[in-house]
Length: 145
Image (cartoon, rainbow, N blue to C red; front, side, top):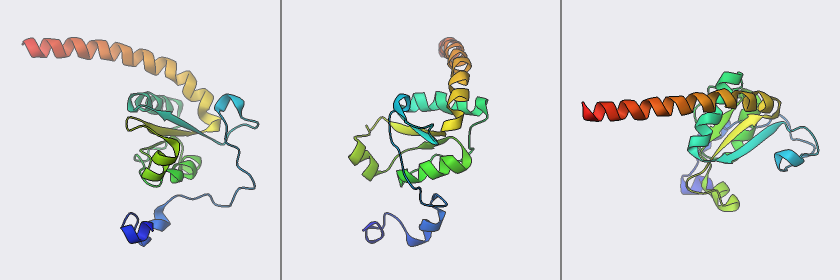
């Protein structure tokens, strides 16, 4: 159906990241309730939170350097496992099935990087607060000059 609608071209399929092998099992749970350490963590958030997470992933050495991904959303999981932290805009199927809001996107990172990204968030949020104050003052100064 996706080919018939022109949503995906057949020549795009080889560029879609995939897992190298089919997993024997997949566990999906809230992060605090995972029965095993997660390979990948999917965070549903506002773009402003994704900005902070991306900056923290950069600081923690967990960023992938890849562009923001679009459809299909599911490719973000193997892409993150392979490359590191990923931002995904989602796709229409995912948005319908999960009720992802129009003002939400995904940030995906390897499970092994969660602690380092959380640690980096303290520095990043503090720096962003200071930079916001500076930019607001500078904006006001420029507007009255």
